[in-house]
Length: 137
Length: 125
Image (cartoon, rainbow over all chains, first blue to last red; front, side, top):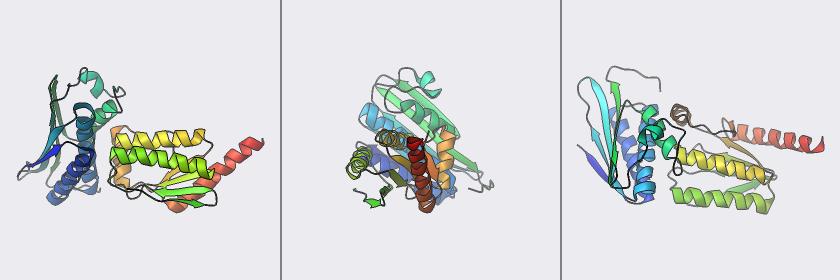
């Protein structure tokens, strides 16, 4: 079942990342993965507030018999990211940390896809672990 | 959200609560710097053990605060980072550049005394 969180004010960043953490925990992800997902959601939803003003975040359990998988989609209708390749390469930022945030997020998750143009940006990420995978953290 | 800033023998000690908004972070940054100036603090210890996540925005704000405090003549130590938080920060390629860190508050207080002593020696030499 998918959960939708409107991202309109700063408190929504906190709300969205808490939901992400809770979903990851409920599914059986370890504490490091819970932190990775919550951090990734924090970065993406903050970009919405800072660069687009508002947007939405959707969290969905897409697990199957073999794998645990949480999919998070963050969408906005802001100006878009002009030089997304360079931003993802890291170390490049137009505001307060868009570069570090996006490139960092990419390193935290197993799936990462971004669609961006003026008027529409969508970042789709997924945290994925095999069900039999045992992680110390 | 107004975290207390305690003064202990010329050293300010504070703890960041979890769930700070960006607005809270900016406000708290100002409060810490004003406290440093008003109390003429030699050191500032910031406990972050309550933080369940530390994203690039907050990491950057902590680095900035430390840099500004040092310009005012105050040493800074950040202590108590949770292991999962440290792991995530490193994976993201974000570090607390140039910030002294300690395992816990005890370690933080010991580290700050050492930094203060070092600065005092440097001034005397």
